[in-house]
Length: 101
Image 1 (tube, one colour):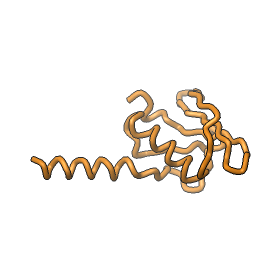
Image 2 (cartoon, helix red, strand yellow):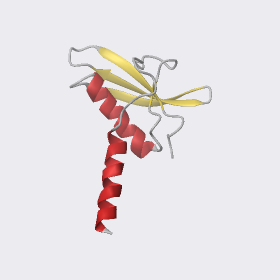
Image 3 (spheres, helix red, strand yellow):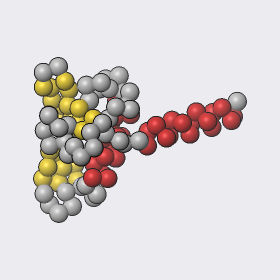
Image 4 (cartoon, helix red, strand yellow):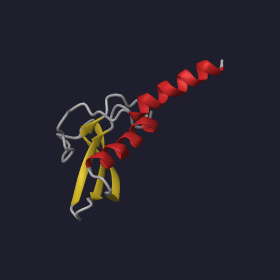
């Protein structure tokens, strides 16, 4: 039983560590090119993936604000950040498939 627990725990950690977005090169600067996490199944997956993606893309960023927006039938997280060089950016994450799950 202990070995099964360890196996399930390790698989869960590997799944949570994946931040690959569905569009390589997408910057998330608008609804049309929002960052998407196809492996996210719920908010428990998606929100940490957003934070990890931001940290990898913009090391030492500061979160200024966050809001949930809708565009048509889709739901987005719009996160305003300040980059380490002082630039302000809004990054859009499409969370339609996992928000509230």
